[in-house]
Length: 157
Image (cartoon, rainbow, N blue to C red):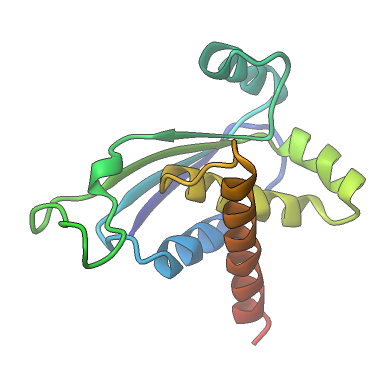
């Protein structure tokens, strides 16, 4: 699994933990081990620009996911895998640590915990999950909670 991370946010972030939670989520979801993922941490100004340009939103958001090649994601035996040796380009997750820190304060947990949650959230979006409808939201958020819980358990052993 190839995961590239770039912190251009100007905020000190434990990028090793962000990589670890992303890798855990991808492994648990059975994603092709040749998959490639990019994680970019950005400042509020750049996230505001991305949110406006790609989502039509006003102001910054916490996480954006840009899928590259949904057809290459291996969801299991019922779906054909990419040709042998061909990497699956999952896409990019963009995180904004400043927005995450504000949300963490409101939620009553650490900024690091919020970034881990947002990373898993972004991975699930890249894998085709969404939360536009109530049933989709229940499924995605339950899966997100399970992945975070199993990741935290694996770290505390």
